[in-house]
Amino acid sequence: MSLIDSVSFQRNFRLPRVDGLVQWIVPLAIIVVWQIACVTGLVPTRVLPAPSDVALAGWKLLLSGELVRNIWVSFWRASIGFLIGGSIGFAFGLANGLSQLSAKLTDTTLQMVRNVPHLALIPLVILWFGIDESAKLFLVALGVFFPIYLNTLHGIRTVDPQLIEMGRIYGMTDTELFRRVIFPGALPSIFVGIRFALGIMWLTLIVAETIAASSGLGYMAMQAREFMLIDVVVLSILIYALLGKLADSASRVLERATLAWHPAYLKR
Amino acid sequence: MQTALRTALPETELASRVDFAPHARVVREGRQDERQDERQDERQVQTGGLPLSIRGLRKSFGDNEVLRGIDLHIPAGQFVAIVGKSGCGKSTLLRLIAGLENSDAGSINFGEAAKAEDIRVMFQEPRLLPWARVLSNVEVGLGRDRASTDAHVRAEKALAEVGLADKRDQWPSVLSGGQKQRVALARALVSRPRVLALDEPLGALDALTRISMQRLLERVWRDQGFTAILVTHDVAEAVALADRVLVIEEGRIAQDVVVNAGRPRARGSVELAGLEGSILSHLLSADDRT
Image 1 (tube, rainbow over the protein chains, first blue to last red):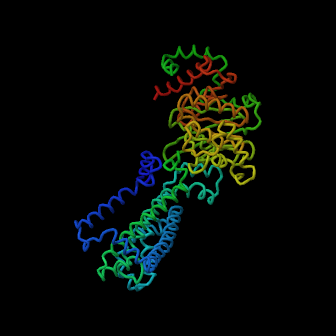
Image 2 (cartoon, rainbow over the protein chains, first blue to last red):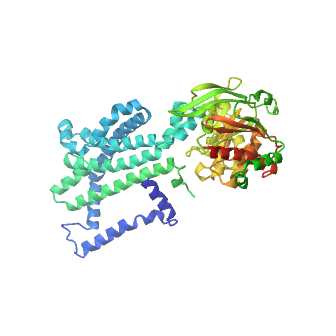
Image 3 (cartoon, rainbow over the protein chains, first blue to last red):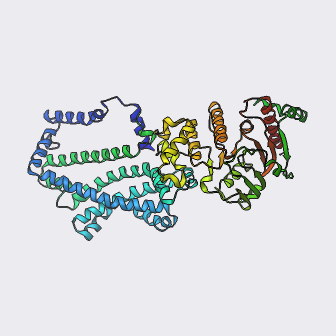
């Protein structure tokens, strides 16, 4: 697992204490270079506004309340869509991982649907839902569904059969076997699915908001483009980056809390 | 290993080795002998174990006939070792006894109605739940009593018996191979089983850890008096631990050897070495025949 490899790699090469700061050196350096390039006129501000201008635009939008409102709308859509799609994906993953019949019945269909790029459905979704909230939620849920479904299924199927045999020998009921053996065993894989899904969640939402919306971060960026407010466009893009990072960090915290037993997460 | 090399020598060598081991006697060659009932009374020290009677046991996997009619009686509390070459059916026999497989024909009888908790298995792999602390792993062994109020206390006691009381809150991944296997032993023992089936439980351990595990196994067996059935490929281990060594060849019991050496047994004694040599030479001569 590349996830696990990278985590143990980080642990082995960690500098004490500064660990939390090291990761911000490169982003900060980029901003500094960018600022210098703009101030010296190396990059015309019509092409790329200076970070200070972007911050100023952000401050203005913050004061007017527009920024917070748009971030909140996008955040809400992302979370609800993620919850809906994630729960359905998780439920199908469980059902198909635990029941042969269910897998035979639905897996082929799901694999076929999976190979349709879900953003290709945007025209159809607009016809169905208009530019309503439900259109965005539908697309996000659909995008999030597959990584969670696939990784839950994979996690359950790859639980060590020797442990399952052990559980049966020691008289575990099906519920107990699931709670004590199968689910914890599938959890690392489920987390891989969640992290993939978080990426897809933002991607889908931004695309959907850019094309058809009357609020949200994507809408804010599109509006700004119409009025040639390039600093707001850049601001939106930077906010996507920060939100993506935030979602990733949240899933990492969750991983560390629930996978404390895993050799890659052990505190030494 | 030196013994093994020497047994590759001619038959006369074998005859002289039997003299080295006056307390050991080969009870039966082949399976024509039916003197099991006499031996039932040989060891009445233990009371906790269950006796075990196997009649005409057969098992095939597809076209491969693994067990070809096993008849066997194990008195309550006896320590039996089953040796044989890989693929001879010894592990299958153990899995049938433990109820992990169903036989094609024949019966396995425990004398009285045995509960699931009465028969426990230990495998070559510790099979600990990596996401449960050591103590919770031991609690798994309580079966349906897991939810009872004294589960913690019983698990702690079992852990203390294998000398790992101080590891109760550790994750299994920080333990050494030997420690993991000791936790697995505690898990198997916590429900006070009356039959313990051991499928090469020490096979993956290094030589020194293996010896200390053998001592531990012998100690808990003497303390608790369960019937122990140990499958092993290590003949030295078999004669060091068991009251009786069964040699299985091609799905049948080829040799049934009683080991009368006193306990605790002196490792590397002439007596045990001689016995080990005669069993090994039997196994190796079978190899030459094929």
